[in-house]
Structure formats: structure tokens, C-alpha cells
Image 1: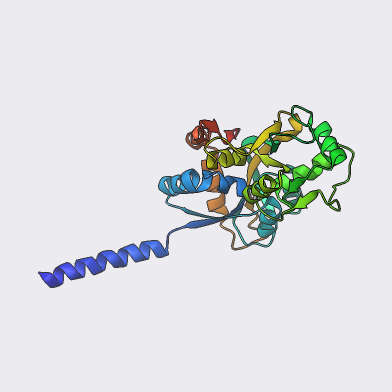
Image 2 (image 1 turned 135 degrees about the vertical axis):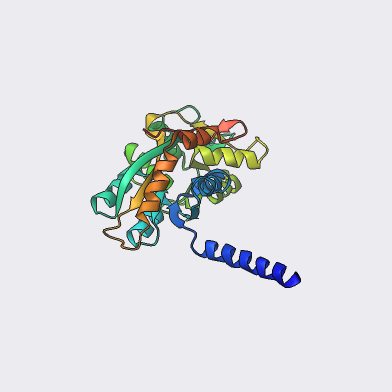
Length: 273
């Protein structure tokens, strides 16, 4: 009887290990904002595995790096937020099946004292005021979607990116570390709202930096998923990538994204069509 029990246990372990060995997995490159906010760890990855049996593995980097990883065939799918950059990779044949899934917006934050007096200004006026006052500004400087947007704002304000100026601090890091640098320096920075809400939650709802500029149309921040083209990358899990995109766009998951909150505030707003 004892030997029979041992045999049954061994059989169950063998079956479990065999199932684990053949479990499907999808590799995704995404932005730091989807990771920092907890959206992937707490909602998307566990729900996707529960609903489909597919394990979602992801690496959180800037959008620029995520797109390069796709181009190098290092991942199966990307979830990013830089439409112009995304289109270049679609045009080159590296990525296919772009699907808009959710959005939030960018905001310019800074110390409550607001040394450059930008509170309530338009984005263009705020960027010009920061440069004129030589007020310290922390930039990610990492080719992320946020960094790409910030660069476009300097250009929209008819200025070159002030990357040679002493007051312009390039961290080369993700969004939360960059906000930390801005906090320590009493500097301004630009962030997506979801990450700012996470930053606020880390400070019990009373963050040392405040939202000073918001609401301009140019600050709209669209997130989209794109599959790696299997014609370019032969080993890409295209069917799994397609399944993930369809799953993310489903009514059930779109509702879950809309319901995902911190401090009672939505981090992302679903908009899959």
C-alpha cells in the first residue's frame, strides 16, 4: 500500500513537471509606467494566465529600448506609448497588428513653491518659463516614450533640447527614479499621470511634488500593443501575441483596466475599439 502511494505521488509530480515544461509563455517588452503602477504584476499577468493558461513574462524598459528589443527578435510583443516611433517599426516590417488599448496623460510636476511660476500655464509657456528662469528640470534622457514626448515639447516651444545646460538633469533612469531625483533637487519633471499617482500613493497621498501643468491636448498619452512580425522573427510567438492583444481589447479586460485604481484614481483609461 505504501509503495502504491509513493508511485501515485511520483506519477502526479511527473505530470505536473511535464505540464510546466510545456506551458506556453509570451515574452513582452513594455514601459516602466505599466510596471511601476502595478498594472502588469497585480492585474494583467495573473489574469491573463488564469483566463488563457499562458504565462506572461515581461521586461519593463523605456519605449525606445522596447522597440529595439522587438526589432532584434528578443521578444514576442510590445506594449508601448510612442505612436510616431511605433509607426517607424511598423513601416520597417518589424511590428504588426498595432492595437490601441488604453491611455492616460502626461503632467508637468514640480515643488509646491513653483520657482518658475508655471502653475496653470500652457505647456509651451511652461517650458519657456523653465528655460528662461533656468529652473532645474529632471529628464529621463533614456529614449523612453516619456522622454520622446518631453523632447517634442521643447521643440513645440521653439527651443532646442537644453541638454548642454547645467540646470537640465538627465537621469538615464525610469520614471519613479527620475521623480525621486526631481524631489531631491527641488526640480521640475514630466511624468505620465499613472506613475504620478503611484508616486503619490508612496507618500500616503501627500507627494512632495505637485501637478502644475496639465490638460493640454498635446499631453495625451496613448498605449498600444504590437506583435513582432513572424516573417522577420521566425521564432516569435505570433499566435500568442495575437491572443494577448485580442484578450486585452476584450470588454472584460477593458473594464478591469478601467477599474484598476490607486488612491481612488484611475491609472489608465481603456479605449480599445
